[in-house]
Length: 208
Length: 162
Image (tube, rainbow over the protein chains, first blue to last red):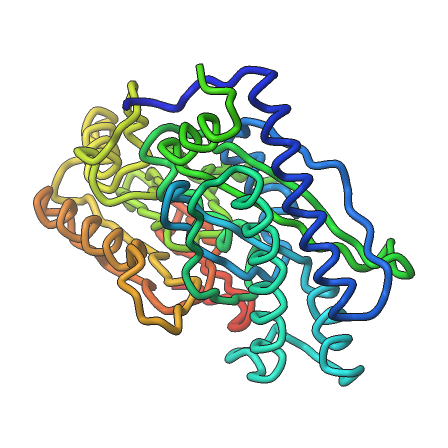
């Protein structure tokens, strides 16, 4: 296969539904973890230029990301991404209210570990829901966490995709805590490699 | 007011003093600067991958790969009248943003990019006067052709000017 696949409106709809199911399960998992209500946004699915992907939270704004690389039927990259303040707040909630600042070198161990595990559970429930829905074999690698310029973090996930063109298929869904809907919002970004996109389409029954 | 020319991801731009060249959020990507200090003119590329022969796109974006970007910086500067012997290079980036506990070889794309840039510059015989590469921090860089200085900003170490 050469180049980036072209994607129809029907295929985007199918991916939107897949993103919906994934994020709904992740929202349930977060809700169970924190014992509070969690809302989710309608997923946005689109073919986006690199500038759009990396500019999602501002290029130089600091974000925290938990990254999982996907193997199996849909190779690609998955990010659970939060702006720094919100990552600090989520981590603090997970640690029972202790003050947390993840933007240190090196990252404070307890905080990094809590956020890493939360990202792992959330992304894991997203992916297992997606796997149940599509019958695809999705194998995430162990997660890794980092806090830095958003663009620097996301570019890691784009390197692989960039062999095929200057675009990525972006499945973007947010979940937010009900009582903190203005201040705490995490975003899932699923960036399948072009080969992975074709497998996804076939499994969803919308291949060309 | 001085003009700042933005270099996007997988992009390549040139500027003469007093304008400056700037690229944001270098992670595993590498920012390459090639310049002639006497003519106060230079170019910057923001590359993502080491080798254009791995490209699977129909039309290769030459600014995305270490080998083609170095070669385009070089030929453009020569075409602008910069003599070969005065060309110098600086580079920054090539970090590993994520540390995987499994120690998997997961691409290690940052260091591979750095090696590829050095190899390409060595073949062109353009000396690298300065590099700030590797580590695990994102970098934003700004180059001033007027004096050949490079400003490197990271989240935790502030701004360094070289």
